Image 1: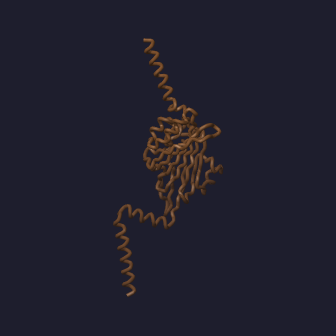
Image 2: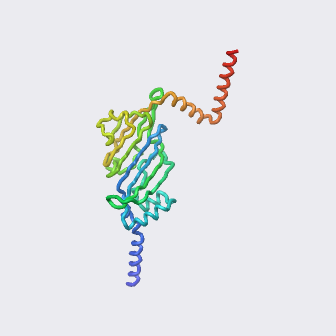
Image 3: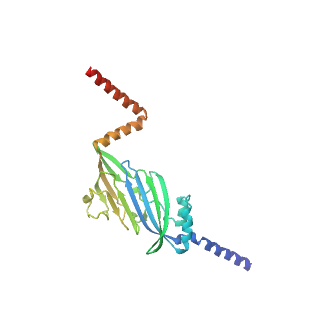
Length: 256
């Protein structure tokens, strides 16, 4: 009986040693950098760079895993840990065009590190209301945040940066909390900026970002025809051709 216990204990120890390269302690998440590029159709492209520290005993295993390009996000979560998640997720929307790229191991002042890059698109990151001719007011939907959960709500953790890039021509109307970059100090100063950033330990529970986009007359005309085409499909071209033909005939008859 004692010999059987010894064999079982030895097998358990060998199993633990064999699995050590996969342990979450070997891959420590040290920094998160999230960039959210907002679109006028209320969606956004998101690029996240998650830096992990890799112990010397796990370098070979990470290099092997990195070459397995067919690994899914869930498989990498089993390797890296539950901290490997999308941080912009709309519970009432969807994620699409997801890509995941584990970067090479590089040496830093803190040892071996690697950057894991996730890129994806998210729907309904903003809401929009038309307040005048060619004038649209957008509001950021703070339900999309998926960061650390504190007593007050979502909060950026240590070494975590959130950057929001506004659509072309956007004018900031209101922003809270005051961004760390640019550091003007009060909301109205951010009216003409194109990018806002918040850094570590910033609470997001009362996050506010509203901005106005005023379309040019050309954009309005193009948007009208895009709307007509999306509604009528190829038949829209027939209508345009008939309208042009009618105009030519009308002009010809008048000159006669």
